[in-house]
Amino acid sequence: MYNGFYINLDRAVQRRESLEQRLEESGLAGCYQRFAAIDGRSITYGPDAVPGSAVLGCTLSHLSIIKGQLGSSRHVHIVEDDAMLHPDIGRVFEKFVELKQDEEWDLLMTDVFLPPDLYLFKYLHESYQKLSATGSLSFFDIGSWEFAGTNSYFINKRSMEGFLQMAEHCFPPETPYDLRIRELAKRKKLKVFLCFPFFSTVSSTSGDSTIAGSFTHVLPLTEYRRAFYVSADREAIARDLETLCKEEADTFTRIYLNLVKCMVSPQHEAF
Image (cartoon, rainbow, N blue to C red; front, top):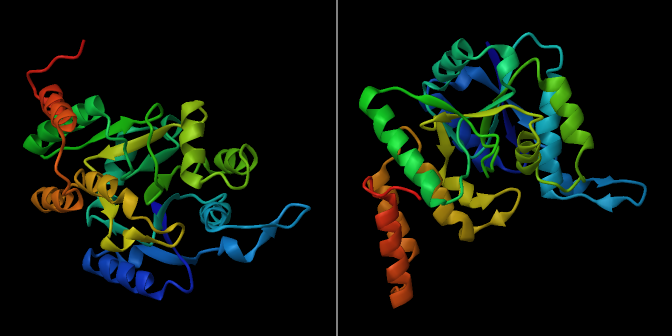
């Protein structure tokens, strides 16, 4: 049904070994082959030989996989090397293609970064509770959402050529790959869906990005993202967030935090 690939820089040996171990533990080792990531910092582009970057290398790596699959009779699953995949991720995709005709979708994300918007959180929280009670899942159209991240996604075999044309030629070279996808979705050029709860998440190695280096300022949002993983340890995540923010809240902050509690309460109605 799909061909699986994971992106990994040659020098990132530990990340490769960790991912391969996670795939083995999940029973998915035979489903994915390695793609040697393009190191954007080792290339130049344009008539002025502008030095590349890790961001450009990420984009070129994703697009190179898709180029290599043009004309394939199978969909493609692309994974970055800090991903953790749930053992049932293949069955989730099978369920999705049962529900959606090929012309109804272009990309299916299996987890993303989401903004800490109050009403979006309330919607996701309530959806999670309902879905968990029945052991089911849903697929959200996220074309209007402010999402980010390409940790794990499926691309429709019929969408690959058109997507390549847009992703390559509609943006400046340094535009991050995930933001290209988000912008194309907002323009209604791509039909992007998200499985919920998430059936992938980011590993503990994600804090040391091969694109951006160490980015501890993103850790709170990363923990928030992990909370929507179907097998997440939410108690541990809550404790981790408490340790990340130890400052005593001032009066204004306490007022705001209590406002948030009120607004996310099931009794609160938006106006």
